[in-house]
Length: 272
Length: 272
Image 1 (cartoon, each protein chain N blue to C red):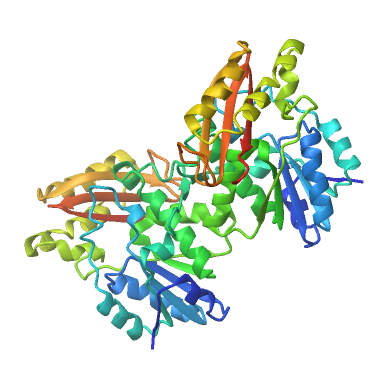
Image 2 (cartoon, rainbow over the protein chains, first blue to last red):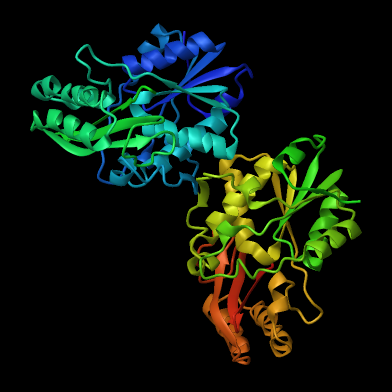
């Protein structure tokens, strides 16, 4: 049985055991399930949080229509033998008069940050706040949101927070589409076309010269005119700097739209 | 004997005793001495830090000419029986690639924040970092920097930091001038005129109607044309909101220039 908690006070009353933590915005899918399984394996207790964080959505973004599927989320948590599901009201996370925000400069400004100003500030702030409430030993995130992982790793390192960030591989459909809560917005036709994103990332993998590599990936994406590319970039890890050749650790990042549905994906290059 | 520490590693090696902490930018005066005395009284051990924090100065401000008086600071620390003086190199505080900043919205934007954009972000970030390194139980600040105190209290509350912020009364010269490391920049004539700032705060104290109260204080300041007023405002505490009558907790804040020397002061109204 997964115990549902709503308040910071209930969290404080938990036994101080070593805790694995999977923070989510709900609308759980098998990608989240993989994070939960890994946490359950690695920690005596696992806490899943479900909180659609208002501060990481822009004013024109999909905060209000972001999918809320609490009953299904709880069922998945029970299936995965998760100990606690923390589903707070917004005022538990941001008490009235909340004013303190965490920023990770530069990392928050590129890639998705360029198109979603304030997004990573909201992410860093809510994750810092959740860490403060939950006090986990390990926290699990999917590589699908690689920029988020990089921002949070930097925040944890700079602020010396006593938690380890664990990045888990992206879970994909059979045809390569990365699992995402937003995939449910896709029409049947869009869903059929969406794997082009992953094919484009694969097309880029053998090439070291970034200009050539991007040209290959762009050519692949151009085969599906319904996909409106927002950005396609190669950046170093973990500093997200622009590079012209893939040498050290680096990844290719892509974001774009099918209709109003924004999808992102990435792939880390295999080191030489 | 005050033990001088330069590195985070030396801090970590200190015995984990209850620690009082007085963070400063050096150029110590009797206002700092009062903070140190209170910490020495209230804690088994006291740590003074001396660090001129680059991130709280604007590009056109006095970072490079801010007074550095290390020998005199150490002598004052010894006189006050301070246990440790932490005087780090900048790279101890901000390791290469440091990117994480703390912001306290609204509170950082008014009063001094309006004229020194980024200042309180720099203050919040360095104090958070120093708290992380020093791990004090109590930290002492002078009321002279009242907006700084309010910003830091809010940061500590929102982030749930395990430290108590202790605000100590402003120490003044006989003629009322608030002690400040920047007073040493004043010419003899400016020094003679500077107490007008305190007289203006006193002139405001009997009045409840903010418009009348500010008129009185402004009239007093106008007697010294060499003082170039930057702002004179009454704000509520601790939210720093504009008010039209002094009712709950509130303070009058002033900032301005004698030549290139910027001075600030404030006075909290006695509650009814």
